[in-house]
Length: 451
Image: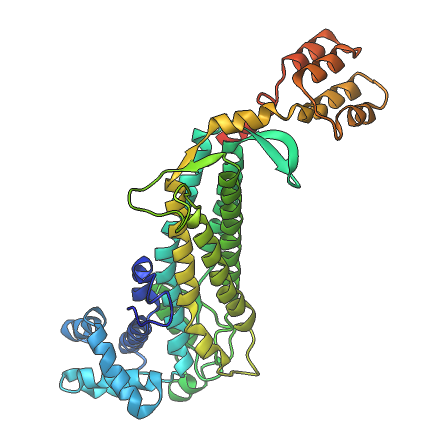
């Protein structure tokens, strides 16, 4: 592993091991075998194709066993065939024929890959790979959302000085700011789950030419839909050329990019809160923060996550913009690009685990939060001028601007100004009782709305 060119297969291999069953060369070959076998089983069950006879229970089980017993060693057999054929899908066809050559199934071996173009097998295999990859990635996304949501609820009433444009602004709470990220991430996760993974099985240019030439009376749309949707759990796209147009992939990768971008935004905010002293980080025995400064505990987990979100998005964005484009009925520029789907998933996985590690090390510093609030009495200019508007006092904004802008404002300054105003007693009393720490609006109530 130490000789690997990619850090995904080297330094970070343990973090992405769950994806090897989804996006490796072995995974691609296994899914190709699965698609070919399911297609053969479906043809055998079609009464209108007598030459591809009905399978016995033992024969069908034999075909299913080829899928379930497929190991990396079996994949290597296909690679050896490919070295001769120089065609990866044809190598799968020849491999399957070898698997049944000494059985009763050999008499129907020419129905393996019947009427298919390579892309019929490949597009379904890629969709299955994405389906498997999402079963690994989505739980990590949900774990991040859950952890952020739990922190939001825990800190929903902890006041924090907001900083719009980096300047002191109306207070918020730690919990409400975390809740915003949890909700943003959840919305994108919901969009990921709503995207249909599509597939086609309609021949060389997308309309069953060869199929109808051999068996003109079969409803090929219905038959292939059975394979794609019932047997493989995907969704049929009947409007294709030789390739499935990959638009759904573009939609998926765009959505994953947005998810990662939101997480990147979260990482940067957490990094900033740590730098401001609002959060500290739990120390781990044996860990070194800096090679020269012993006191440091660097926010490296959020930094690592930010960097890997960027790498993942670079891959996803290229996939998204490239894959929907194919010259005329087909060109091969998508083939090599599609082999990098797992790279985007891999960098995402590394990013997610880094964020989770960072979240697990956080410890809130309420003393620093309270100090910053107590040093920012000027932010009460907003509620004061708002109540002055309610009372019909002339030019309230301008008066507060003159009082506060560029000035050091204390509690006494604020109270003196409020006492000078002609306000209803209840409004005046409410302003006099207000502090930067109490001026948080409905922040805690908004956190309660998290699902």
